[in-house]
Amino acid sequence: LQRCLELGLEQNYDVRIIRNEQRISDNDATAANAGMLPSVDLTAGYSGALDNERTTPREGDAVTENGIYDQTFDAGVAVNWTLFDGFRIRTNYKRLQELQQMGALRTRITIEDFVATLTAEYYNYVQQTLRLSNFRYAVQLSRERLRITEERFKIGSFSRLDLLQARVDFNADSSKYMSQHELVTASRIRINELLANENLDERFSIPDSVIRVNATLDWNDLLAKTLSANASLLMAEHNSSLAELDLKTVLARNYPYVNLTTGYGYTYNRYGTGGNLSRGTLGLNAGVKVGFTIFDGNRRREQRNARIGVENAQLTQQRLEQSLRADLSNFWQAYRNNLEVIQLETENLIAARENYEIAMERYLLGDLPGIEMREAQKSLLDAEERILTAQYNTKLCEISLQQISGNVMVYLE
Image 1 (cartoon, rainbow, N blue to C red):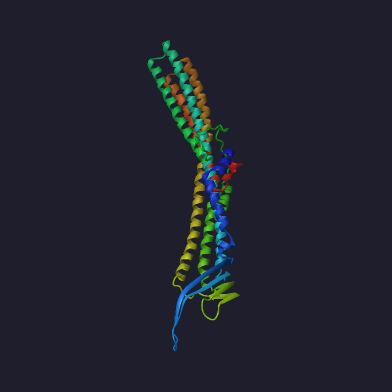
Image 2: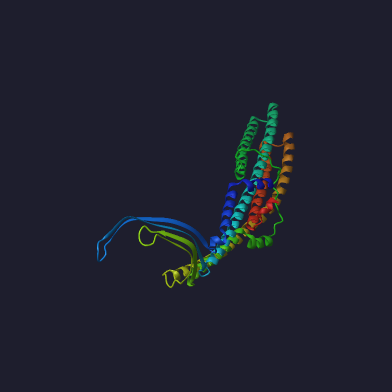
């Protein structure tokens, strides 16, 4: 299982995609993206105008000049910096940091879901393999019963009805065994899919021959970890923080803003007519702009909606906590009940095996009819099936409890 999880965390497509998305949120959480840093622009340009000019004075003759070519070239550096905008920039930076942490939580949720899914499928494969082994054993028992029945039929101890019934039971067990192969194959394909293997039908062997259940989980420990470490609950807390930051962003419009602009540049003009041939200007310019939005018609509405958003985020968090408590309680009850079922079915399996051995001895001596022998065999197989199902259901409850409490990564240890 540990090896499967390690491979899956490296290769699974969903895990790789969410990690790339986390890298994007990490790249976005910068002061520059929040607007804390100034913008610096380097510009250069050239323009020209070709004109025909006719000037008519109040006295004298009109003067006409054709082909006047005026030229302008400019180059400079401009800096724009928002010094203050009602704490909106600082709020944006905090928002980006919250989104960065939420990106990490989304990655964690995806990884935990993957670990829980693969662990459950791994033990499903163990379950289906064990069930296949049980069906194989049932076929062996039926084959042995059929052999005994055939021998007894030849010497006249059993009737043809006994022989036909033994053959029907053997064929039925063989059919179940063949059908079980499909379930084993489907589980193997599912594991290969989770591991992102190119060959989905790749065969592998696992060392686990039983479903090991952790019977030492503690309710108080699970509840404490759920309330403090559950990734979805932590995500809801960050959503509440984002709602509060949205409110602060809206409230920032109640403050004035201060913008600083400065630049340094050179402008060269060349004239096609007039007394001056050219003119060059080199210099520094700077300015400060202070403004305040008195009324825009939407501010109060947006503030009311933002406060409602904060309340909804808090209610959503409380609802999620209640839902997690309910899920934890349900899985805990199922977990404890299945542990008791395992203990009970273990005793039943011991009794069923002893009953089958006694029935086989009587059957070999001819003291037990085939129908009762079949019932003893069926009781043994049913006992094996029930304990296997109880073990798998308990394991599923265990995995769910570990996932809700934020401790599902324990399967990697």
